[in-house]
Every structure is written in structure tokens, then in C-alpha cells.
Image (cartoon, rainbow, N blue to C red):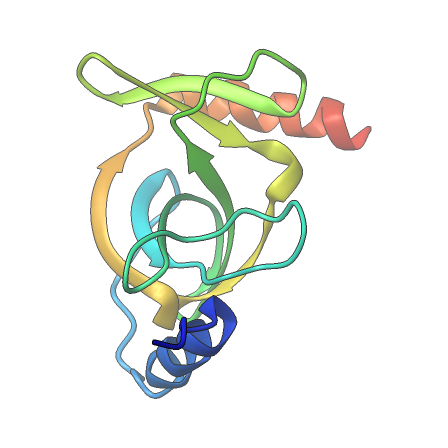
Length: 132
């Protein structure tokens, strides 16, 4: 039996995602599972049939477009990761080096929200990291 190439599988999902045309209403600080896809090299990938990954909404530009930060549960203690909790007894890490723009059609479902204090601290860390 021939193995399905994950890039081909993602391409099918991406085509259906592009046709959604009904983005969810979202706000900054919210965390969604989004269809992040199968990516190249060290870029964060999604998991499962729809290539999902939790992403923090960092900056909303309009109802169709935002800047987000992929999250991971793998512990990393360095300048490229910001540790926080949005679910009880579960730590998450914002992968600061993976900040990127997303179309709102990729949004799948809301799973939480970052605290205001963490959000303020996270933005300061990003400024330091990017030397802004």
C-alpha cells in the first residue's frame, strides 16, 4: 500500500480551508486550534487529520487577518519561548520565533484565552527578542 505524502494530504485540507469563507469572530489574547498545515524544515506543523495546532492571537488587523504565535506543550526554557498556563495544571509555551500572519479561515475552534498580565509580558518579550 502506498503511503500518503503529508504535503499532498495538507494540500487537500488547505484547498477546503481556502473555500470556508466564514471566518470565526476572534479577539486578541484568544487561543484557537487552527489549520496550520504541514510546513518546511523547523517551522511548526499542525497535527492530526486537519493539521491543527494551538495558536495565540497576538494582533488582529481585521476580521479576516491576524498575527499569531504557535504554541507547544514541550518545555523550553530559552529566549524563543514564553511559558504560561491557560488551562489548569497545564503549561504551554508560545514559540516566539514562529510569529506569523494567518488568514482567519484557518481558525477551527477557540480553546482558551491568555491572561492580560501574561499578554502584556509576552509583548515585552517579543519587543526584546526583535529588538524593537
